[in-house]
Image (cartoon, rainbow, N blue to C red; front, side):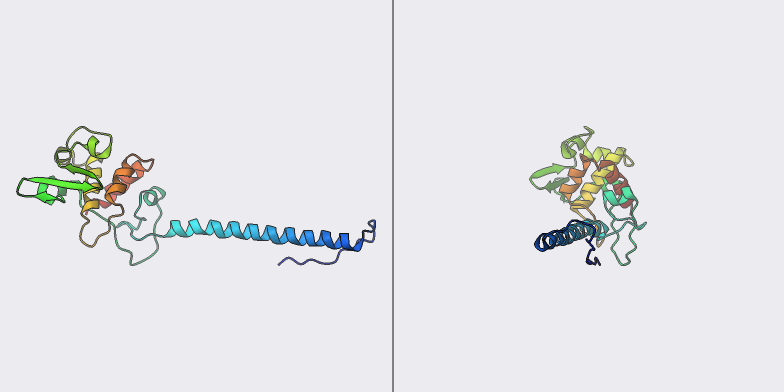
Length: 195
């Protein structure tokens, strides 16, 4: 609490009473305004902290289930949160395990927004860059590759595993691939796509 007291001005040239009152009032206004500005800054800085601390799911190891959560190695102390996880790339080697699979024509057709792809689409065509191999050939021949984990992440985001939580939508998975968080997302997908 700031306390304003009377000041002894006996050694200073005398000022008219109204001028002294104006300067005291100006000082008080500055103190109040400075206090409000600082208080606002503290309140504004608390909002991002609360937002960053929020998580709706954790990995099996207790890390916050997001690319940035894995990057920071942040762990949640909350209990009772659902575990985020997905099926591993090897699960999707079998075409009938894909979302949108049709036994009639042995094709898995997936739709993300206005974009449609199948198991025969190339990785580069689906993710916007990368391998020219088809998704199914990567899953069958390169199961432990980063590309295989990205494909599994995309398929898991379309068709989540039972009651488990998958942290990203299909559109977000595709956007993450070309984002600065791509490396962290790869780490996250390797952790959670291995039930």
